[in-house]
Length: 220
Image (cartoon, rainbow, N blue to C red; front, side, top):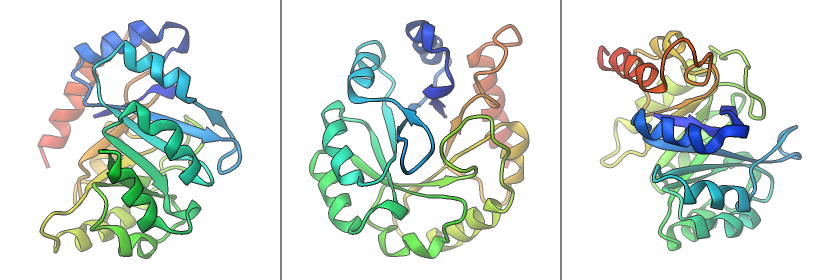
């Protein structure tokens, strides 16, 4: 379970981080946006450095940017567990994957809803995780794109033949209903934002919400 921190209460991040630790959150999903690749801007190195000081939850940094080669250099000092770049934005994915690995970080590659699985096939044995966007990158609160279910299923069919397949992560309106739609090809990592985790705090705790989602996943 990866909490999308851009959906948290930014005025009370220290408290939010404490609640997420108590909830047993596995990863902090951190969206870095440049305002060019997507029509939004978010999260810079100094901000993430301060966040890292207040939590032991491993980082899962998602570079929703053009020229990710430049941004990799800005964020490797944070030593995230995963560092994701978009296949749509890089000329030489193999070189970038190697660069990330040399920093002791697990490389991850992302594809947008309109990008076919074929675009990442040459690299799937070189990365530790594949991020499948189930909404268009950039903004919280979007509707889940059901056409991405076929992509997830196709990806799992390909990965099933590998000895050491990468993890599959999904991001975009992930909550109980959309998780159940993936029953035939259940991903490994779920990015939880407003719909799955950060909604009305008076309703239930983050711990309760994450446990409920784990129970749903375990039934498949």
